[in-house]
View 1 (cartoon, rainbow, N blue to C red):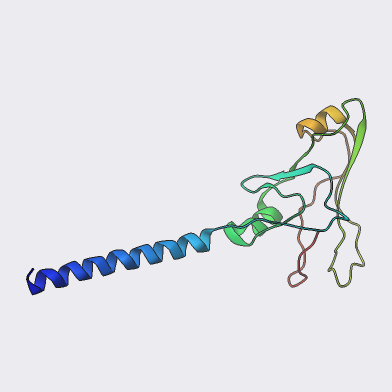
View 2: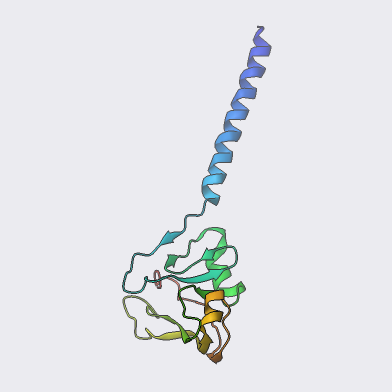
Length: 151
């Protein structure tokens, strides 16, 4: 092989290698790990709280990636709430609160109400259709900056 051909081949291989490294760095940055909370005092049962593009967010730390936190607080409406174990012939109440408002260190508003619906038919709750008497319209979570994770 001639010297200029070898040099061109080496430069080409170097470019391919750097593209692969750069590509894998982008993949790592765009990777989104959804972590479950381990708070057994709150996280029990099989309640599903489903948001678009995120899926079931029940007892989940909402990741920073893909702007999920902004979407949850500003763009998405109320989640789809589903409880498969609901008894069809019973009525249910949905209460969504923030036990860590305004922060875990100072939860003086620990029962901050995000949503309150009564008289939900078990059959509807099984299907993830929240219909009933709305006592408080859904208000998305908007925890103050720097207050850590909220349950």
